[in-house]
Length: 441
Image 1 (cartoon, helix red, strand yellow):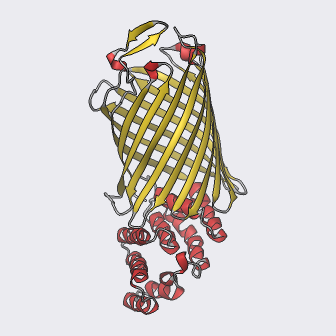
Image 2 (cartoon, helix red, strand yellow):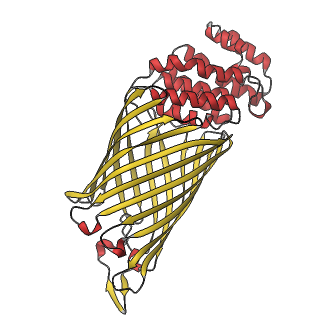
Image 3 (spheres, one colour):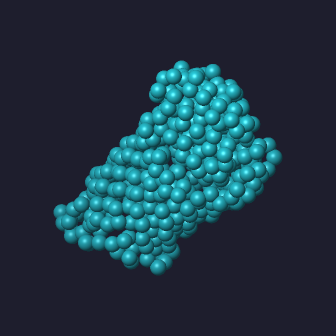
């Protein structure tokens, strides 16, 4: 992602907060290792420009080769930042975390450096990890820093690009025919499974109005264009906007407000949605975070008014951090859609489990499994029963903190999808790959 604003003023406000985390945890490093490179003595030597003296002091304090490599990398990052080379400092702090993803001083100093260069998305990523740290003071100060980032008034924005080859680009049926009653009907070739590659380019922008007592109003606008590289007639443009109030609870955050979106396809407006959305995150216990969300949306299909109606979506999730490098998330969801046709009305339930892990060496993985069941309310035309679908998915996302392409890192996602349906027209499977560029964390 590409941030669109400078946070130099904010950096001055939060340096003391982040430095205090280091002071609190100087005596409590990961795995019992001494946090020598975060000691006041070494910090003072670096601040005074006595870089060789700092290196010599570190060598005297830590003799173990593995520990010395990690702490020396961290020290060299501090020296690089003190010399004004924030790009090198960022790379070295990430290298120290690649040696040990639980090493707290490097993660905190990396947050400071990312804020200094304006990479607020990257800073938020690491602050979210710190907000689930087992040390209460670390969690509290990370939350306070996230609050200050959220309260910063001004413009923000991002861009993204992804290339997505798929064995079933149009999610078409795997069958040549489907049976209605005692008759078999041929499935149109355009509705059958077909491979292809999609290209999506998107971006968003927002403006935050700061209010008293940790409250903000956020005006947001975003859009994306998706096209098939194999069939240039297959294009879709999506536009979304919203106006949200967000604020701080005693142990979490709340965001709520009106939203609207438009989908344009086949040279015409395909879908309009409008309504209210909300979400909340709550810390319920050390290293545990609960998330709640809802959306109540009206929907209008200009060319298919029999699909007009509304959609209600709810979700609840729990994230538990086993360590700063390993986090497990469980999400449960429900959806209700009502139209002008009973056989299109449906009630859905879904579940997803995801394991995120930062590996030694810099590899970052996010492995997930998900399932959902869709039950339609009216009999499918020609059948004596409603349509029912069971949707299963399994996949993983892989990235590497050591790969930096001008501030971006490639992210590779693979997902296998299988949908079972009692209406063979909707029965399919798909292998999907997505190669995207995101802001390097």
